[in-house]
Amino acid sequence: MDKKQEEQEQYDVKYVAELLQYWNAYMSALIDEIYTGVAVNLGLKESEAYKLATKHPATMQKAELWDSILSRFKNIFHYKVPKFRYKEKIYGSGKPLTPRQWRKFNNAIDNYWSEYADTVAEDVTIKAHILGKQTTAFRKKKKPYQNQSLHQVIADQYNGKMPSALAQAYKKYDFNKSEKNALNKTYSSIAMYVKQSNNELQEAIRQQIETGIKENKSPVEVGSQLFWNIERDENLTNRYSAETLKKNWNRIASTEMASIYEMGILAPYEADAMASLKDPSRAQYFVRIGGTCDFCVSVRGTIARLIPSSIIAGENTELLSDIGIKDPNTNYALWIGKNNIGRKKQEWFHAVCPAHPHNKATMQPINLDEEYYNSKTDDVEHKQKKYKFVPQQIDYAEKTKEEIDSNNPKKIGNDIVQFNNNIYQAVDAAQYNFKLDEWKRNTSNPIPVNRESPSFRRIFEEAIE
Ligand SMILES: [Zn+2]
View 1 (spheres, helix red, strand yellow):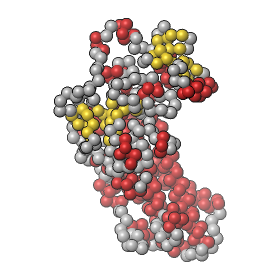
View 2: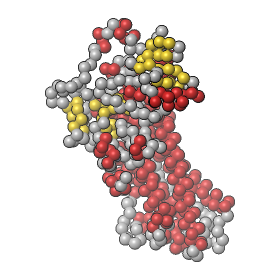
View 3: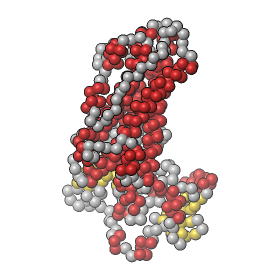
């Protein structure tokens, strides 16, 4: 995907865009601070080192100043960007550092990084998730919310204070189980990315210093090239500049932010999604909106039904019919935690946000009785008149007990259950893949269900004789 196009994708919701802006600014400030500390260690004056961080030496173009962004949000976040200073000489003593000395230096970076970067990552994670739920609440109340700032939302909806740690939020608010699972999972992948960029940072600094020694440069020379490293072959050295590390981080942050935020949007509907398995009138639908790349444009307007993530066994399909659900409105399933990680582009799920790195498309709830997706505005709009082909809704209030029972999974043989017009067969975990392949070749056979999977519990343990 085109780099420029990626960066153009913007959140149309101001408070989440601002949260991302703060995160990027803070992490960039930390990276700059470590580079500055290294430049000072190499013999640059502090003022010179800071100047280097903010000005591109070839073009003299000003790089972004983080201070103004950080101070804009200082009433919300109280995180500091303390100085990173390492006292022992890392270059200039005449000999290269021993592995042990490198380890010591890297430990100093580790400590600095984990104290500041980790804390902010957790704070941003939980805020992004809660803001996703907030967006859902705004949409339900049909309130205009897109132009609300982070300050405004926190002041109006959270009495000026939003949780800054997961444990704190779990205590204060009601989080359903699948929401917690998905959030914990995403948070640990964020923690992994934070650690990974720490490793890249250490590698970048070491690489530049060792190259400097090899090329017999003075420590001050190496120090002044640290930030940009423009003198040499672009592809090779740019990897190690502070600029590149910041760009890489921004890419990770925007992708991770999008997935936590989207999870927050879906979470409030999880109970309805569960109930809809027995009572289809409670089904919740979403439509995919936004995104600017060829993929996103091609899947705009895709309608999907939310299903509880507990009935997803493996993530090989996004089709409702494959999970045994017949839906008159769509054959796309959506669930909390759905993603395209590890899939090739040709195999990307359609009804998922984010679908790819840097993606800020969103799944917007849609009430198919009253609303429709307008492809011209790429938005959900109210129907003027009653839509002609609204699928007939069965009035479940009128149902007799037998009819309700027929909606439950029904045991029809040993390890065989009928449910939602499908026949399922329980199979042992070891046999599952084999049975699944067999079934794919002949789909008129019973659909295999792994005994170890959550769907097994859902379909077989609740089945009536
Ligand atoms: Zn896209």
